[in-house]
Image (cartoon, rainbow over all chains, first blue to last red; front, top):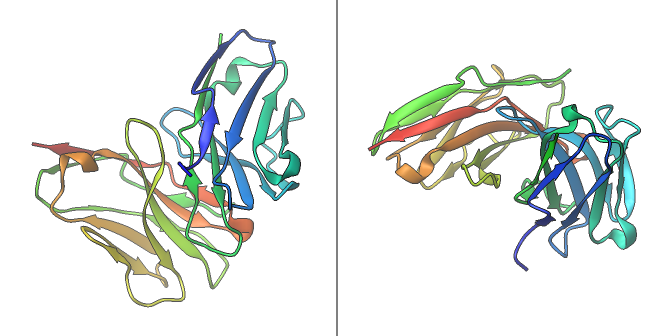
Length: 114
Length: 113
């Protein structure tokens, strides 16, 4: 297992288009998290899953955002009708709910909306 | 909102010297976890050190150690014998219920050779 994988690494899209990102967590990790990081800032929580259940969504996650984790494995984060304010790094992380050792993060997907 | 504050946007240190990064936080919980994460220019976030609030003893990981002052809600990171590879953005982080992480704004550490 090589850690948390995110795809794509970079995405440039035109305003108004839809985009989808994928995250593959560490296989034995039952929790998966999405964070958003804008330039020069710390990441902000968006949502998290325990297995396939989405347990919490931040108010930052507008109705244009949707996340899924079918079968409790990989997860997708979709942004519909992208806006320039959506430009950011989207980070995925995974952990075991039974442990509090912190997360393992992926390398992120950098989204640029032009 | 319960926050994490890093008052030093940037710090510099000479190679082989020691530097301390400051952090204060707010919480109403009595038991919680604190972390320092490092984010090098390659952007992948890496866990540096972890502290459990119920433990009095300060955590240490090789050249990295913390000064955890629970009553003052202070959690500083000391890096000894600084190396060029330590150059990165450092985030002070508190874990909330549900294992959500609350990040500070970060401190950019520059290491001079």
